[in-house]
Length: 99
Image (tube, rainbow, N blue to C red; front, side):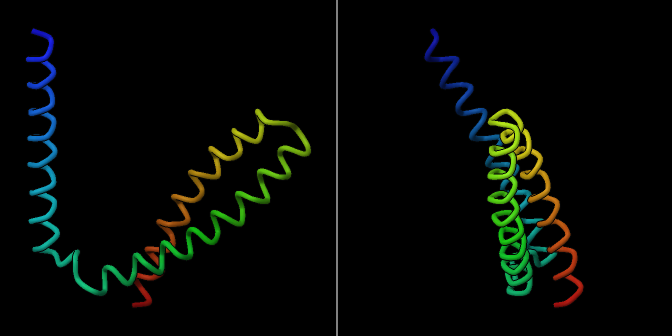
């Protein structure tokens, strides 16, 4: 009986995700989220964001390991991940106005 509940959960999960993906795709198609300009903006934003993220992560990790040790370094890297996501958001907003 365990495999029945596993299969039911799998089918429910795949069905739910499929419905959500279909609705997002239809909405994106109506609002032209998949056109060339959208792709260009996000490609440039990802490039800018990753450049900031990689540079800061190297400097921050080396400094934290040398000064405090592994615990602080891992906390700084977690904070840096959030900063990387925020820099991506800011880059998207900037490139949306430029292009």
